[in-house]
Image (cartoon, rainbow, N blue to C red; front, side):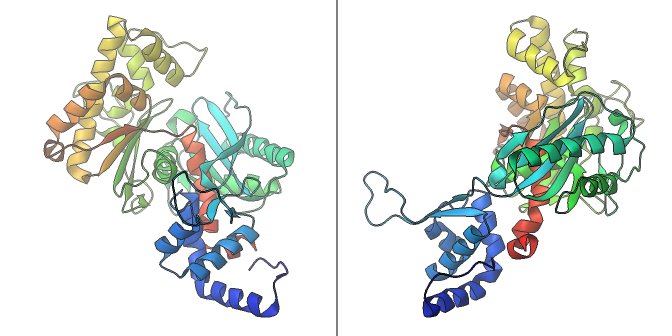
Length: 412
């Protein structure tokens, strides 16, 4: 309950409150439906929840009173339609936000993200990283806190994206090699301490960046509507994977599932820090692409931007085309093995891998189909990620989850 006075006559208010009490368990599911765009109207919300129209109306009204959604009781009718249009539901544009933070090998960034995965504001990124995680996380939280002061928004919590496996339940970074952070650093605890020190409200969370890409894309992007979603991505360095099973992120028994970067795709290839050779991590990331194209990485921009720019602006260069073919074949071999094991209904590719898909879609799909049993039986849709800053959006999803689970309890 929102705690606001009910201006309706006593009998009407009591009836509405009774309906809400019956539908209180539907508040979280209703908010998630609006959050993910699956309930644009009250009629759809009623059908999806399996409740009466009156109960759906009371639930929507309560979510509006909490400042989370807006209910348009007089939407315009579509051309040619008949009858009275259903109340339209949308995210409250001035509602609460989550603080999202992203750290990667080339710097960090902070943003405020509202419901619906909408980025409200971003702080200028930094390209300087310290070997002390407390210093880095203190800086990124301070940038987020400044955004909150500037916008005057309420903060529901904070989420952090890191380019490392995050071991559960302690929240320890497992392999932050490209951050120069110590293995086993309690990154979630450090992040939570910085959030509290900045005087911000709400809980704090941390997770692997590709897991968060998958979560964001499954709810708001290229993965929406899939049940078993495989995500493989390369950002600034290395290759990561994530899996959504039956609509829920799969992290394994201790948070370390889908370390796909250590699939061998080029026997006898480059040595990998895991002790093997020819792993995706060193054979299909931006550095591997620049090397295959005969380009020397420069310090003026990130490796990912250099690789993307080379493909977009110089694809007619034979060396660049050959490098694309080489990496597509390596990536396709890895994806085929994952398809054989996981049998996903959709694959999404992020970072440079999305760019490679755009450059050579037929070649990549053919490699996956030829090398995988399930691919030969009809193919698995392979799509590029569609969200800008999907790691930040995914980090915000961590902070929004308690609100989605229990709107009244989280915002009381």
